Length: 162
Image (cartoon, rainbow, N blue to C red; front, side):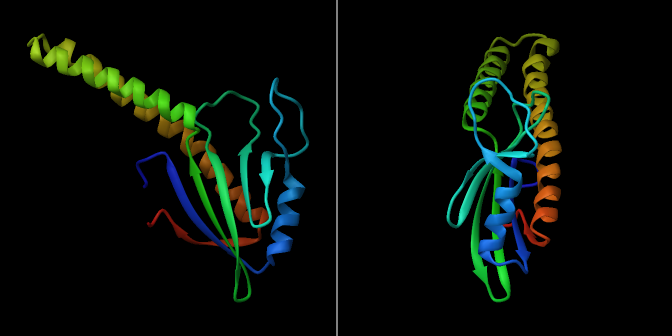
């Protein structure tokens, strides 16, 4: 899924499940709604017995920053952490609406047999939103991948293969 705003990564670590949860609690604070706050932790979200749902706390506005969910499983000599990063649901719905309108606009322009400029506008709209989404998503997902690798003292054993 290299060209889509979705990541599926599996980390392998020598830490136990309990140690992974303990480390998570060291850099994740409970999610707070409302105005942005100052925090000494880098992530916010929820921790569960064998999983988590977190977001990176960023100082700027990036609607395309991923939601990160993970499942922690016992492994032969440690733990395996399966992590999925995807767009927030409301951003995904907005993008579907944006792309649908651009496609409808493109179809209308093709049916009316307009100038090439009129046809290129909706194509530009689609390319623009794709590039904007991928840049915003990949910048944050790459930072989160590196952070999780460091925090879990883990190695990535699989990326984006389903």
